[in-house]
Length: 108
Image 1 (cartoon, rainbow, N blue to C red):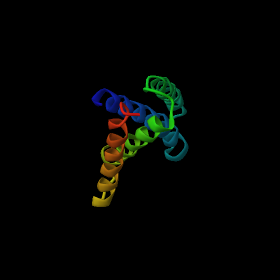
Image 2: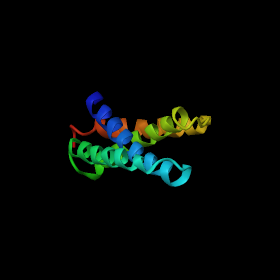
Image 3: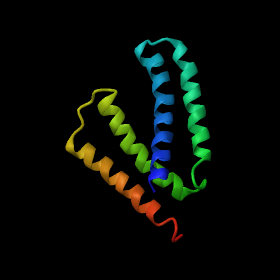
Image 4: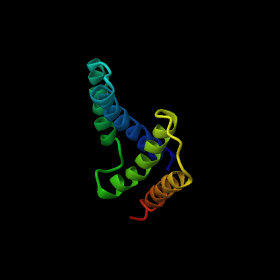
């Protein structure tokens, strides 16, 4: 379960970075040179998706829970957004949902 969770986290981080860098270029006036590392990050994201247990709705639903938590952590630590208690609660509920989903994989 830990290996899968870390893979989900790495995948989410690659996806967020791959989308954040073009955002900096388009909205914040950053250099277009950011598009190259953005493309690399999105390529990494796609490659990481191939390492997941299976390409199924169950896997992507579980990944979604980790993505929500990763996005909230990004907002807090990278963007400096002060998150509310309900932000943290929602992210924890999403992460708990992921843990529930992957805990039943062996039974499925």
